[in-house]
Length: 455
Image (cartoon, rainbow, N blue to C red; front, side):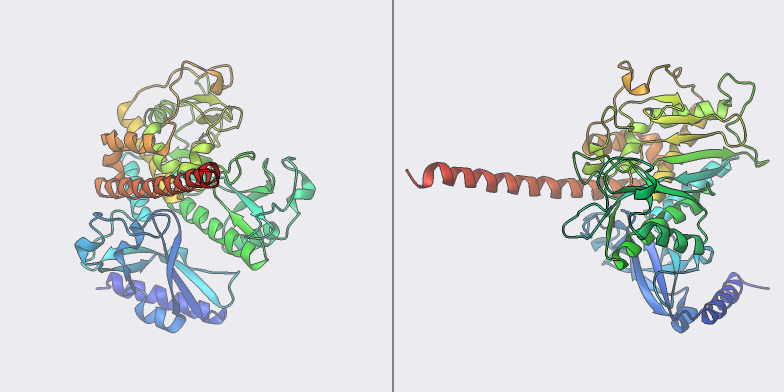
């Protein structure tokens, strides 16, 4: 009887043989952490063949906050004596890394040593949600628009171009980073559709074709790593921070999604409907709107992200949907053919793509279960509809909404959601402490100027 291990060993041997022909010397065994940051161990190729299924990494790594600080009481740290997990490579992600000489990579899923996956690992969360959607008879097709700022260097943070001319051809080629990274990403198998200068000064966007949900997340994750690495190699600095400058536009991560039924047909399409949408599409819209306040905590996961949601900024400000409406939370792309899909405009560029897609899919699952229709789409820009409920104003408010949205928590997983809430609240507490210290220092400086000399 052929075992899974034998099949896996043969597959690994085949990959290693191919990589040796390509001159590969090292393998980056990486996993995305809670913030979507790449964490990895680099292994010589010969050693990877021997230990591909047994490489270990501290299990707490998937739960650290955005500053790489440990988060107490997660069940992954002191409770486990900071023990190891085992990195299981997803061989479908094995690829040469074109921007690093003699190096390949494989994305891994962490498992405890007893063989159980870590429920809080973002990739595990997405797998679980997609499995729940599949149980309802649907698979996903997803594409993420990735926006970012490109600077001349990382110290002065001078944008690579001035002005606000979106799609300006000359600015599309201002720096060598974009054509270089797109060449590399195409070499890695990403189906890039286009890149262009965006509205902000020094801002760009790269788009790729829709893929199955996990593949789409892997590609969005890979794109981010590639953009940052190539920019650094060429002497530039790229950042997916949502809003680095208050006077400039924000970087979004708009996520396009459709569902396929068991016959691989677009489940959102109904050409007999007024808007060309099926009941499944209406239920999906309803679910995304109803659970948006809670999902926002994952779709815009930092306090900086909430600087994005302003009127007249092409970012949503309320619980709205509309037909090809760029001011709505849900923009319906009703092409009345197989391309019909929904665009969720809540995600910010800084969102972890695994958690963003997982939360959107989870909201759609709830919509399919609740079977409610959304309110009628407005004829004006959605941001002008004063009768619609506003979005949560802060990350803290959205975290509270997530804590109380039992249905969404259940689909995402209670263990993950509990850890996520603790992680994000620790980040907010660290920000609040920094702001307080700065305010205290500023107050003391004023008091010295006011009183020290004359009193």
